[in-house]
Image (cartoon, rainbow, N blue to C red; front, side):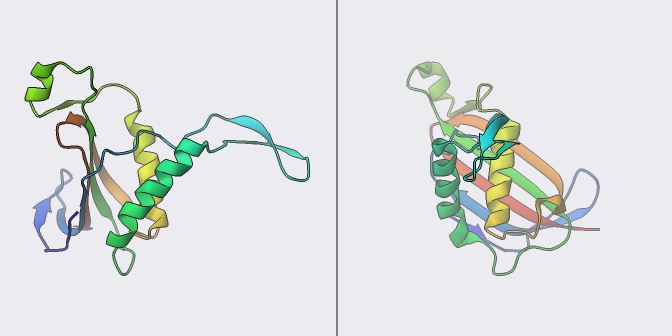
Length: 162
């Protein structure tokens, strides 16, 4: 696990400068649950109905796991202003994966879970852990999903300087 704030500066694709604010690298096989449920008619305790999305137990477990790993690395104060976020999910190879692919070390992941659903769940957890005030601050987002011999969840958050 790694958390650094060394002021490393780069330029975003939109031409603005960015400065590394938070870097977290968690050596786990990231949870595959997407925390997304389908819309259903649900009942409240008083018996009245409403339309909503139930969270299944796998989603709750995934959210809890991510929160437990990421909360200790949250900044002391939530980041402010426009942010550039880079997320890399490296999942463990499936047992059935060909040896020739495993020998490559890392290959693109093109199956479920969907990238957008993985991102939404992770960004919600990062918001809960107070990495920022609101995920609407994210101006630029880069996401990768791979199979790897070394599973890891890597998150780099940069402040954008206009």
